[in-house]
Image 1 (cartoon, rainbow, N blue to C red):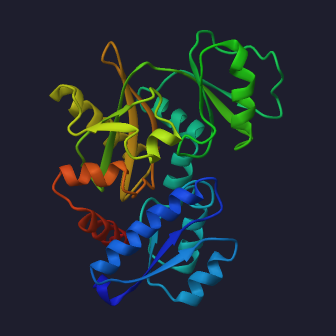
Image 2: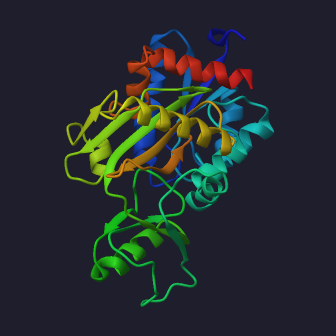
Length: 304
């Protein structure tokens, strides 16, 4: 299939709390593909997405959505029904990767190290609930990304407010043991692991502001860890990609503690593609420029 003869629809925006980031990702993808000579249309995703896709008569969808209704298998299901190839993971891989509880259960099943955690359901939660012992903890919604609704809790006094904040975004949440260490991330491009990136937020915790504000975080490529640990990160990223039935491009976030033990935090099936995003950064370090990365994503979509 010659992709330059096809109409590509970049699905962006959406209805999740990550809408603004998705618009940035989608705009960057649209601009780059247009500059490369592709026939591209941007589609802002809403409840009428099936009609918009049909009206635009697109041949391939480049999914630039983040969060609910975009990264969780729902829009992928619509595209499957319509017979339109799309970038990224399929319905199953998207759904299980988006859900931090299910993905952690699969990590544990396959011997992938991940921080200790427990799950709290909104309908069951009462103030005074007995949690795992030992602060600090991380409180996060079971679904979602961009660290929205995520808080580090270092004392009992602020635990309830962090829990209620997470419940704003989901009906069940994770209470996870906070690992103090080096933040690492490893991308996968189909079946190839990209260079590992070390993430050094200036304010300590890699939160929404640190992720999307230029200058708030320093990145090291390659990561300042030894070769053996670099290879371990890449092997873990490839294993997560396979275990969660992913395809295309993914990014696995990890942390290495002071004893050099590596823990997997989560996998992202639609990594950001903004000016400060990690996958374009890692691809560049591997000799793959941004436009070439996008073309590879499209080629993988039509080969499925």
